[in-house]
Length: 70
Image (tube, rainbow, N blue to C red; front, side, top):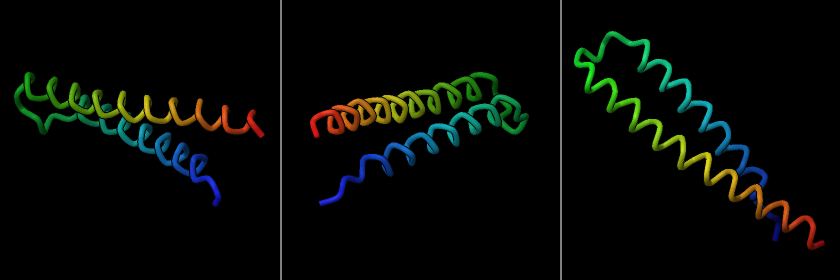
């Protein structure tokens, strides 16, 4: 059975970049009127980005270990 780790890691990295762009867009946006809501939106997106980055890094380590075991 073929490994999907490389593909999954690439998708997680792409997702992290999309979230980063979303954070920047929220920060620049004047659509969110309340500063507190804007800050909370940035923090919520940051939590998502950290989770995705952690998943990607963990899978990268596993992928590297898998490759060194061959």
